Length: 409
Ligand code: RNT
Ligand code: ZN
Image 1 (cartoon, rainbow, N blue to C red):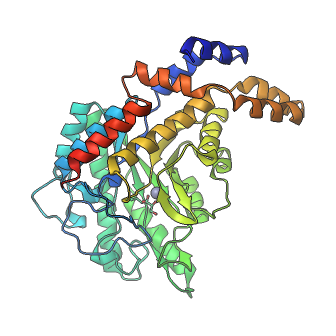
Image 2 (image 1 turned 120 degrees about the vertical axis):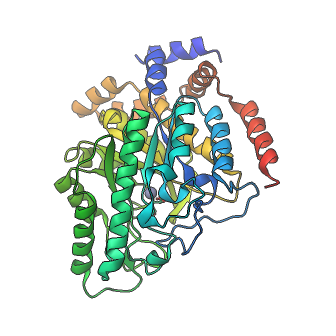
């Protein structure tokens, strides 16, 4: 089918494909660095990942150095239409120095910023509260030991300074997202004490307002090894974010498997100015599978468009699969997020809303079902062609060729 006839089909429903394409061009997705190396990072490791972060698989080609990771990212970005961001974790420092987490400074990350300038992309940032001996108890900011808490508080403070400097250098605010693995494997006696400690530690980290960066906090339901209690639960962080005016990070893998995360967006957005998403695909648990173009992702995209939240939602990705080509995983997942957004932008929202407001749920159902037959793929192919990104078999062979070139690592 030609783009012109697809355009006419959408126009029949009152949908402007050109407007959708233009809007999609402006949506930057924050691509997570950690899919490229199984969340390993570039420090001398002294602990286990913790909190249930687990990349499974041993596919050849894992990036072992910042240069390899950047090369892989450059390839991936070239297969993803549009201009996107990189989400960096503190454990991905690029330096010959060996600072501990409480001693990291901007210069340890400067090569990433130079590269980002070169690529014309923005950077987001994250403190790393796992994969460290001082996190091996699965307690960091909520640890009963003041010394351990202070170590992690200092880490958090430094990441905010670094994120602010990154944001200033790149002219786009850097979202600094706090996730801690803190929790208990078995039933705790004093949840309140742990949550109070987490709150006090966060208060200390966030004490000074900072320019050029945005603070976010990420909740979780449970992790392997912290089955009984996660200190930073959804209720904890929803309240914390509202009280302290931070962003709330909703990770799609951090809720009960039958919860509808898309449904939470409008509810949360009434109390918070901005939201951060970790788009992921939990399978039975927080398994961080590569996102598919499935109903969950489509529903997220539809809510972002329908509730007019695109302007105040930072879309980040959070999945890691080491059983397939890591670069292909980035490309497939990011493109799926974009495809979902495109489909959402191609809906006749006025008509659907009118049916719903008139309690005409029959029309609402007929229309949403008929819309499924529209030629979204043709509009997507046009979008990719305009932005010089491959589709179909060309994409498959590009991904394969690159994977073969890194398989010897
Ligand atoms: C862990 C959280 C967190 C991490 C990254 C690596 O369950 O989802 O966002 O995945 O910080
Ligand atoms: Zn996450």
